[in-house]
Image (cartoon, rainbow, N blue to C red; front, top):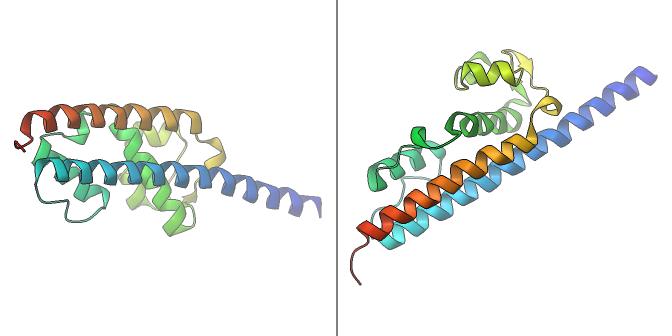
Length: 154
């Protein structure tokens, strides 16, 4: 009986940590969408073809010349996005396909393995916040500089 309670408590604990990952990524998506909308309004250009991450990447590259790969913690931010999707769409199980979308060094460091459930309790949540802060802080700063240069006169 106690082993069942221990197992249940681990599941709840894991779900709480996975909810933190989902919450962090949700805030990132919101920030990304707001920033692209602001840039679209200021530059009088076409918006992204959708608010999915890959469409946002294309928008920032094509309209502002900003490559996400040049931003700090790009690989970690992408891994956080994938972990969010793994939890929401695969009940926390990491397929080989999803694992291939995460940089190998990050998957190893965060102990993410193929065809296993992700242990969200072992993930460095505080570091996730720092990675996202650095990535989006730089994206905002770079976007502002470019918009100030490219903005059409009023």
